[in-house]
Image (tube, helix red, strand yellow):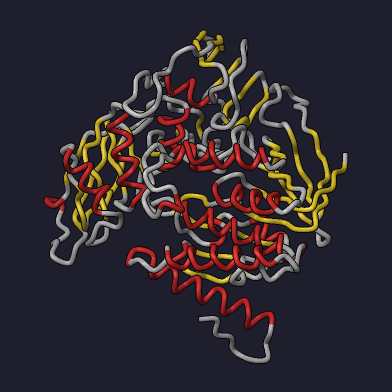
Length: 384
Length: 101
């Protein structure tokens, strides 16, 4: 079975839906693909209220943002194909998709419906995957990524354990620790190998008020257990620690929740032949893109965490920016479109100006500069 | 352990339940939830043992990427428990050695 559409967006999180909405608003046919059974991406796990400006729905919970974005997209005529996994993309932007695998009955000849989707523009909004922390015992059942813990407790409504240790005090670790308390679990402590807490002070204060200590310059040395986690051994790793066994402490937990960072998940961009650059501040390898999110491959865009780890509001605006850029290419004489596109671009950079986002903003500037240098080798580019 | 009441999310009411068999034992699962969720609600966290060193593995990534949580479903090996929804009458086997190749 073969289909055609103007714009294909892969991923239905904030960035993907943002892109789809702007394209559809200006009359383009849009199909959003997602391998999951529910649209909304990581927003569905975010039961806390978001920060930022009103334009980014400050004070609104992530799950509600997902619903609002999906409803807006659907009302504009965007088609959303769930349970659809893209496994290949060709040079002429035809995608190979497996549809309906997850929801089909599990049998030896399990039904999958391969189909081809031809598009003129491709928006890669495939998000991120989690980095693990490696210590002896990290493969034991009961050691879980923060995303898996969130899926279990907030979506499936099942607590994967009773007593947790959270590894990593960035925003993800702090928020998950608080959500664990909300779901009725115990959190023994949050450990952070760095000297400073990485996440916002507000999130840190919330769990400290509940009596959960945040131990900085501390890490998990190993996790103990036969068939699953029974205890974790933690220890100081700061400059002033003498690294003796007596510094170690064994705590009784049944679950270790890892929140030690994300990396962009942009395999499709790799398949499409886009150029990448390595940026630790953005989580690792990211597809190079211009100021409107187009990769080094014509008509292929990358948005959201797939283009570098930032946060939800920025992801949505990156999606909108790509959508508006596509719309402008299709409607070059529409004056308001140009203004809208620049307005979103300005808003995006305003949100990167805060202290927390500054390193990421600098890295993004370099991504854009390198895109221009690759595209126009005649001279260095300085967009800023 | 299921999270029935929650300060932010709505109480879990009106769920439909199905019956599945796990390692020969019948358990009740919420319709539409993943096999992993159904097993964890029953306190089952070890999904399989590795073929060479027989080390236990459970749910790690929860999004179908790491393949740690593979179980045998209706006789089909290597089914990812975290992204496969339960169905009435489903037969799940944990701990089965996953053959290479």
